[in-house]
Length: 374
Image 1: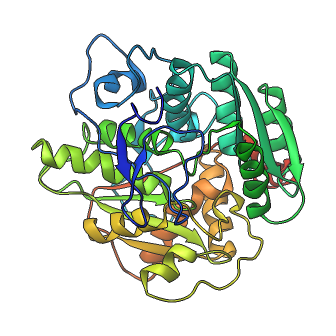
Image 2: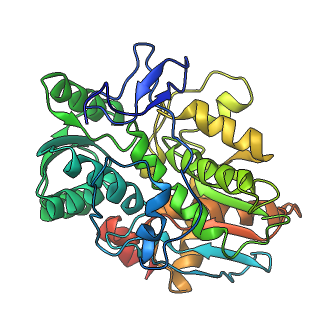
């Protein structure tokens, strides 16, 4: 599928039409291709997991599933000390590689395989790289992962064990992105989880799954960690498609939660300049310049949601509570629970039902953290 034959979507900053799938997924203005709405919202009864929604995905003709069993995770009640009753958890931490990124990797890699891509690069703090590495290996695609040198050793080891060549990049998270961009400029396909819209579209399948358990009249509130903004953008796309199809009366309120050490989306939402990012416990969302900031802000505004911020003390408390209840998620995944607990302590509530998306498994955390929480 070449650029001329590829469906086009608007740039998320300037609106210029861009290819839905291209080796260089950046607009001249610095924006990225917007996440498209799903094509359909009816599941295929002959398929399971994410691929029940194959008809929703604008994949190249003849693209077959690349699957490890993603999209078969439960929605279950979440009961913790201090947490209001009725909160649900979408257990994305139980995906095949332990992250919601498996939804995006399955969709993106299926498109890459169908178009003959055999080598790609990615930049990630670890989660997306691990997921893409597993799916790329399943499709026979070689992946080079540019990872910040400060990422936990366990994450880097897992990415390498999954089949990727790991290149450690000194400096902040942005340095890994620049390294991947340089490799892509030399002609390698940039399978960026942040910039490729088909990856973010994988999150729309989570919205389609959630719509099967949420009340259609008022689907409540969905709370997620927010870094690049792809999860918010994908969820909005999925829920918008459901509203347009008459399956929901309105969007659920979408809430993105950021770390107080790095909260550019919150700053953009309230019209302020983001302060410099600092290291923090939720390393998966410490992104100074989110690729999908315009879409993330649009998602919370359109749904009546917001961008919340919690500090590391509140995050660690939520993380400990989750681990003690047997949900061994990574710190980033505890952000939604930390935010809900924060509101409850202030006697504030969110319109229910409330779904906290637990986005990643704690296997990625440093061994010292795992031992301290067990």
